[in-house]
Amino acid sequence: MKTSVLSSIGQRTTEPPISWLMHAALSRPNLISLAAGFTDNPSLPVAGTRALLNRILRSPGTGQPALQYGSTAGEPALRQLTAQHLRKLDVVATPSSQTGRRGVAATIYSPERLIITSGSQQLLYITAEALCNEGDIVLVEDPTYFVYLGILLSRGLRARSIRLERDGLELAHLEKVLQTLKRSGDLRRVKMLYLVSYFQNPTGATTSFGKKRGILQLLKQFERAAGHPIYLLEDAAYRELRFSGEDVPSALAIPGAAERVIYAGTFTKPFATGARVGYGVLPEPLFAAVKHIKGNHDFGTANLLQQLFARALASGAYRKQVRRLRQRYAHKARVMRLALEKHFPAAVEWGEPAGGLYFWARLPKGMSTGVKSEIFRAALKHDVLYVPGEICYADDPTRSKPNHEMRLSFGNASEADIREGIKRLGAVLNQLVK
Ligand SMILES: Cc1ncc(COP(=O)(O)O)c(C=O)c1O
Image 1 (cartoon, rainbow, N blue to C red):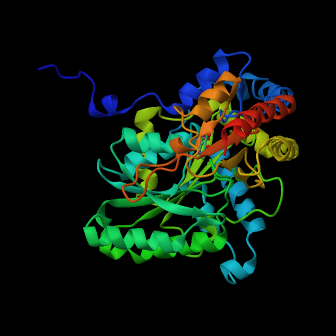
Image 2 (cartoon, rainbow, N blue to C red):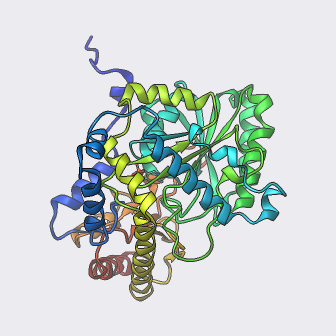
């Protein structure tokens, strides 16, 4: 009998769909990709980054520490500045009526609870590694970030999906799923709920503060039956890319959140995706476990990049870049909206995002957009690519996987390509959507 040389993780982990989509985008010069989650090229801060790096490398005194290994948890100055930055975001976003007289608890934002990671993606992976054994369950939004589903699949974890509404998870459905899991004896396998809380990838939905409170309350309610804490992992990757409306406080601002909320943040989307630095705020005993596992992965995020972000935050260059990006994406989102209004058939529904990088379009049920569908093939033939909605759904025995949606990104394509890409896609849909 032939046995595989690969471990069970090695065997389970197949090429993620994102690699295929990115490869398709890069290998066909005429293809307009509205699929890849790349960000806007012309606004990448080349000159600003050069100036910051020049300052770091100006003398051996500042340059040598940046070119040396650092510590696993991250550069102390960056941890401090990041904790302050995050606290400020929450203080500004939180009306005192939401937090009580004492306001946002300062201790939650202590640099001691904050770890710097190689992109927030690393935090998502290591958190799953630190918390979950094979067969454990993670609750996810329906649909969710498809790369996260890849992590769960690879690590042999099960996803249970919770229905998503415009302002976040449907609380009644969350309660129902938790009850069902309790009845079946599976609740003890539930370790956390993963939430992409701002301008969600893929739907653009933002979770309201009220819903975050409701989720945390429900998770706490079921902990006794689970026999252990159930964590809320808040992935705020797109938080700072808001271009209209007011920021929503993170779940860290909920009184009593300190022991249960894991916050995953990133500097890549709001500054430069090539400079992969993210961060996590974690309660004990998770913080120590994540730090120790990160020690095995890379014993610290690239020090030069950490120094870059410490300088960017301290000098105001980061804030300036975020302001520029917001204007830029507001404009690109408008370009995409106008193109959708002009070229998409009325039977296709889409909501307008207030931030982030994506539109989510719903075709009439039964009109498949999947990789093997007529629509996907026709779109490719016309040199335009989107993310088929079905890859963003976990397998769920309680429903058949929706396959009539598409994620459209205005992040990387130029304005001209957004117009042309939507026009081409519109022509395909006008032909095939009944
Ligand atoms: C929802 C979400 N979370 C996390 C990430 C990872 O971002 P990074 O590792 O660049 O911080 C992404 C990237 O696309 C994302 O869409």
